[in-house]
Length: 236
View: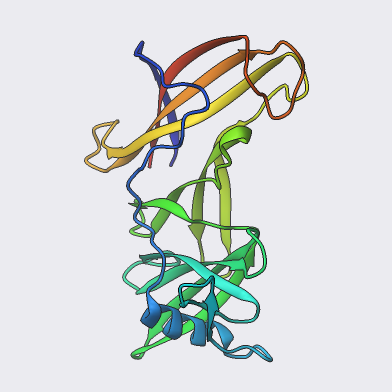
């Protein structure tokens, strides 16, 4: 169940092109052991797929690569059904910033196995929430490019595939015109907003109206900026 609640608060606003804040996440990058275990499970049944730790840069650091993909984010939970040990592993292409999708892995009889891979669903910076049916779901910040706006997604997984639903679409509006609407995500937190003794997601959202002397995309050096802070809440 998702209910969207809205509250306005008049506070001092950060500049429209401020860097994204450092926020808490329940997801994280895999360590070397996790990359080896989950990467090996991902490769089962795939031709020419094995985990290789390849060097990157000049400092000698290595990254795990399998099937031309890099594991960038892990979320632990019980996603497809209650009381199971599962992981959602997000994979990105090794040669670019583009992400391929997410793999659901499950621990059964002491071993991890890949259940399925869903393309186009890419949870990375997420908070975990427990549903009423005792399954877990993720609220995830989109891949933020500061000049082009942001998104907030709800990611769920069942027995056959993962899904991604947009909770907040903050993509740049009016790009190429003299008035542009720009959205910036601030801090977020878990908070019970509907008194059901369950944590919900609360996000500070900053929305700016930029007046430009000339049309540009992305906008640069606006002549006038109007902004507002909105606290958005989603009951999880």
